[in-house]
Image (tube, rainbow, N blue to C red; front, side, top):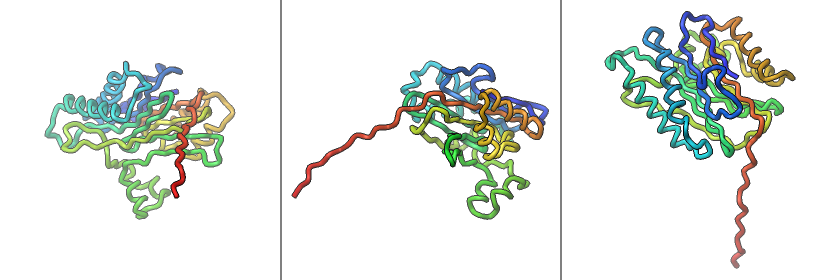
Length: 260
């Protein structure tokens, strides 16, 4: 279930893959990217990264997907940005955040760069947020250094400054943070979103919505309505419900003879 809304902005710089309305039960690849640069083509950067991942991974055997494949495709997306940059000497470059989700029958791979976020939520648990990506942002670094509190970060004047993003013609390309999961059960959710969603949807609100006894379509609509009422930014997301979990990982028992 996708959101890709213009929100309070005059132009849409967020991109999602697949396009809104095109994902179905067999889709195994999802991205949400938040472009930066305004008239310097932030929407071009986010769209190009989404399309490069989508095209390069369209015909793979998803059961053989690896983190190495992700990193190779990330490099291809950087190459595409390099080719698209009209002014390599510009100090104000277009760019984009990245959130990535890939699922198959034995593991889930998530990756992110910037302040767009990925969640793994199990609503039935007492502590339902099993994973939340750590933003590459100035305020998050200040929180980790205990210079400001998480509450102060929400209203900090530089809360939109990010410390890592995909941009063209970088001297050193930033890596993405990549995680793999095997503990995935029926009833879990993965949620990818741009920071425009996070203006409104706190962790507590997200969990409360995902715990509601309503359809998943109603849940994403509840998120859309809240963001539409208050978000000043573009807001985009993918809500991916898990219908069939992964089989538990069985570790082989290794026996050893006692040696006197």
